[in-house]
Length: 461
Image (cartoon, rainbow, N blue to C red; front, side, top):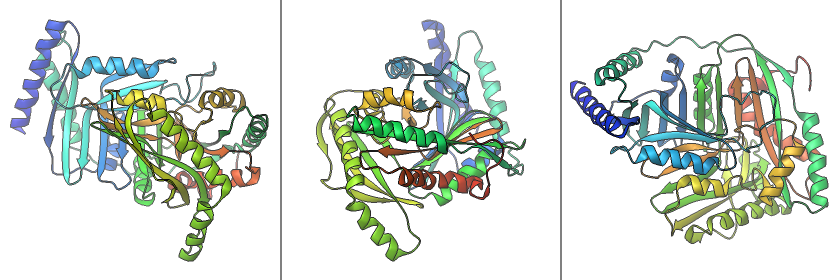
């Protein structure tokens, strides 16, 4: 630890000199290897903000605690503005720094106050403490935004105090809250479905994705983020697990099967995931369900719309785009999806956020054509999607990163929990089948919270 303290001091001194010379704050960062960490234990025991991301195979796990740098942007140019602000800080540092970032589904924000206020339309956070596991290597990165207005010693004392608190964690027992349902979202979903089918029949859109919002009120017990994420990590194999928790009592989390994009050097990996069938209990039934999905005209049509749109979005940036001709099956605990992996090699120096802007929302979350679908969703849906169905992930100062589509997710806002699920509607869609699909897609979060045992209570919306 003495060597670590020396290195941290050197980095802060270097940033302090730059901040004084350039007359603006500069990031300082230092990374070292640690024996191991338990991300959920840390979340449970710390009162800070938390940011979490793990890959489906759990080979990569990242936990950020507290905020060293927060960047925000809004409006139609939010991706470009956030990229510009991030690039200013990127050029200041010599080390590799990681950030978590998320976006709202749309820039259209309803005028009344809502549960998504703490998230904004575009946010990027460099955590003060980043625990990162890649394979068997565990590291801890300490970052801080250094201003010439404070002394080097003040930053060192503050970091030492905070780090000492992290090294002396004592686990309190998380109490399981009780829940009562205040909105099931069924009537709103039915109304959205009828309007979606009307717009398809009038040929305004080829496909449109409608969402369902289900809300519960909880008891006064703090929400068990750590227990919930641990359950999702252990039970939702094959899915990314994520959390964006800007405040102790406010957070957005989920277990999504869908990667939006991964960038490593000039190489891009993405996927089309659309078309769903419930996973049966037995292997024989499961094999039959897979074949049914692979040959179902409605699901194949929905899937090919997504594949085509993703290829079109990547074309301006890519020298090559590769994808199999026919979809595969993506297996999750509750469902099977049609899945087409797509790879591209960039022939431009486009940033990761620029590519994300081109891809979002895919027809799997918005519809086709994209702009018309998003505009119609503003009229059809009676709630603010917030970050549901939006890009969330990590990026670093080398321009690399990975973002997912934040579905199979839920929002915690003080004593309320809102769950979200969506369905792609095409001409052949039937209401009861789509409504049943939302129940299947809500089930992972409900199981993690024990909500699958809760009966409706309170007022139905």
